[in-house]
Every structure is written in structure tokens, then in C-alpha cells.
Image (cartoon, rainbow, N blue to C red; front, top):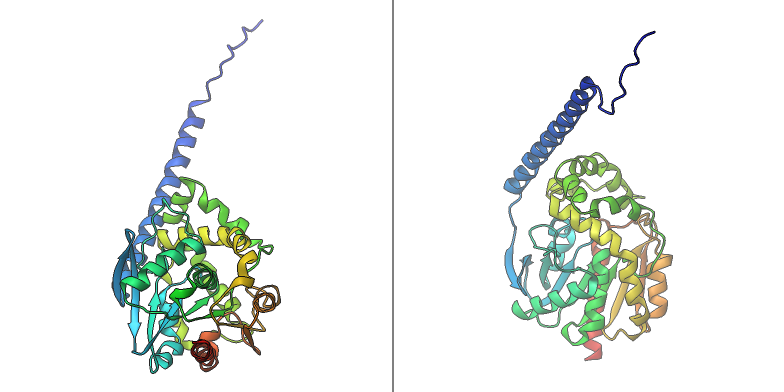
Length: 331
């Protein structure tokens, strides 16, 4: 009779070595991915240094660009964007012939800071910008907000109605609606894991679908040739990636906290959207907001998507002029 072999819980030695090898390979791959992403973002920073100046507000360093002179006009970009979005559009050059145009990098985008200790919802950002207006001697501007930035502009009008003359709300998100893509961003908010992804895999994953995203925001039209100069890799740095994930997660909580106050908006308001917008439904947001804000104007651009300032800059400027005229009439 053979003596039975003793039972042991210890894994075979080759299994342990295999597991260690796999971990080492994964670590090496993540390290290589991080190094390559850092190289690309560093190169983007060298090729696209800050185009404007900086102002510090409550310990937060904000980057802004000024063009032209005259009545102040402030432009606030949407999520996953920066000043380059407006600066590449024809709108800024056209508006600068009449207005002192100030384009801000919102907190966490471009070259603006975003302290992690603060939840940067639209109300918090509005308070930051109102203070920036005073520091930069921006006296009662017309404020145009695009997409996520439209919520910030609207919060400015609600909380600081005496600090601005009028609002232009372009392709904005104003009411809680189902957003399936928000679930995809939640993993990047997981402590440690989210940070690891932003420095390693996330830049490459986002870059791989960037072209499809552009087609979606400009549909039903084509992506304008001038927008192809947008510095993609500045948006793929860890801070802008974290910022975009946070803002997508805040879409519904932020709009839910604000929409009950819309009917009390005081400054003149012009709402604009494209009827072909595939990013968000104009009926669910812009049209609904127009119905809630008495005295507002609502312009819908035919065959235009989410980016009217690139496709119909003359019409967007006309909306800005209308807001200025309504403010002058009221005064």
C-alpha cells in the first residue's frame, strides 16, 4: 500500500512565479502607458502655452484670455473643454470688434486650478467668477455660457443679478434627465483607482474615441477645419480628466438643485440651441427653460448641432447683441 502524500495549502512554486510575473508585466505596461501619456501631454503644453493671463481668486489661480475693448462679454466653455474652444471659433474675433471679450478656463480645465477640497458645482463656480469679475474690473458683463458652462452662467444670474447685464445660454443643460454615459465615468471617481487610470490608461482610451466624439457634437454637420487645431492632449492630462468626470457626475444633482429657481431670473436672457443637437435634447432643456423664464428669447438654429459658435457665429453674436440691447432698454 502506498503512503498518501501529505495535503498542503501551499500553491505550487511555479504558480507563484507565474502570478508575480503577471503582476510585473501589468506594472510595466502601466508604467509605459503613463510615460507615453506624460510625454504627449508635456509636448502639448510646450506647443500650447497659456495664451492669456492669470488671476488668483480665493486661492484658486484662473487662466483667462482678453480680446478687444468695449462693453465686457464673458465666455464660459462647457465640460471637457477650455479657452481654445472659443478662441478657435470665429466668434471671438467678431465679438472683439464691439466688446471686451474675456474667455475663462473654468476650474480644472486648460490652465486653471481646481482644488480637490471643493465640490465645484455651478453655484460654487459662479461665486468664484463673480469675485474674478471684481478683481479684473469686469463691470456688469454680458455672460455667455455653453453647455455645462451655461449652468454656471445661469447660477451667476440667479445669485448675482446685479453683477451682470444679461445672459446668453447656448446649448445648455438645465434639467435632470437620464444620462447613461455618466455611469461610465464613475470608475474614474473611485479613490486611488481613478487616479491610477487618469495617469495611465484613461488618456489613451479617451483619445481613441475623440474623433467619434467630435463627429457627435458637430452633427448633423461636419467638423469644421479650424477646430482640428484644438489641443487634444491638453484635455487628456490627469486634472482635466478628473474635472470632466466630476462634472458629468454633477449634471443631474446640479440641475436638480437649480431648476426650481429659474422663474425668478432677473437679468435679460437669450437662449440658443441647434435643432440637430445630439448631445442633449433642445426640447428637454432650452425649450423648457424658455417656457419657465418669463421674457426670455429663444432662438433655434436649423441643421446645427451642439456647437453653434463654430457653425453660426454671426447668429450667436446677434444673440449677444440682443441681450445687450435688452439690458440697455431695461436700464
